[in-house]
Image 1 (tube, rainbow, N blue to C red):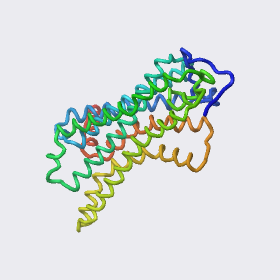
Image 2 (cartoon, rainbow, N blue to C red; image 1 turned 60 degrees about the vertical axis):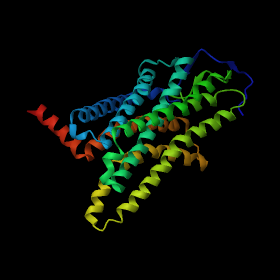
Image 3 (cartoon, rainbow, N blue to C red; image 1 turned 180 degrees about the horizontal axis):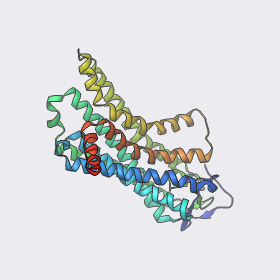
Image 4 (cartoon, helix red, strand yellow; image 1 turned 180 degrees about the vertical axis):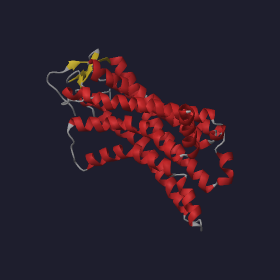
Length: 314
């Protein structure tokens, strides 16, 4: 229950505070944010170009990686420019309609990425359990269905967010203590009963990250069961090596969420500026690191990148 004596009606404009308590350091924060943006765009664009050009990479694992790169580029495109506008030009004002748009698209891309990671876990499961039927099971029509399912789930889960936010009639303040427009950040400054909004926020978390992480763990449990039935240690290592990049990406993507949830369950309250920095990491670090991980660990991509640099060197 959130109540306030001096409430204000739903404002036409909100003000994003950036990183509260560290306003004087916004200029310094802009440097790593800008570098993250550049590295993310260059890295994911390179992955997409290589997969498009190399015919040998037109197989399910790399097509799913291309989907991941598209979502990563979309995610940083709707978050980082707004943050840099706050840090560089003090452009903190944002209209309520623009807030609602950001509220839908930012978490939607995050939920899509989680869904693609689940699809990639299924891809590794099929590759190890049914290697002879791999290309048949994960044919192009199946990949299209998986992509549409990921998109449909994100739209279905996040579509209520702007609708519910639009129904909030009064607020304690028009200042949002975030560097982007987050649904729960708006709910926390609303007046009146917000229990339905909190329940909805938990449902989104369970229906996306909770669901995907559970099935990813199940997939890798079955993968390990199949791998350790292989008599040859060399064959076991080769089978597990095909999952290495995906496991690194999964650990990077879900660690901040798990850490944040566990901290709240255990009653540990972080300083507001630290919480906001960690929340930003949800959206910024995985898109930057994903292409670096796959570029370093995938032979075909690594060789193509080295060939490009060699050609430029000559």
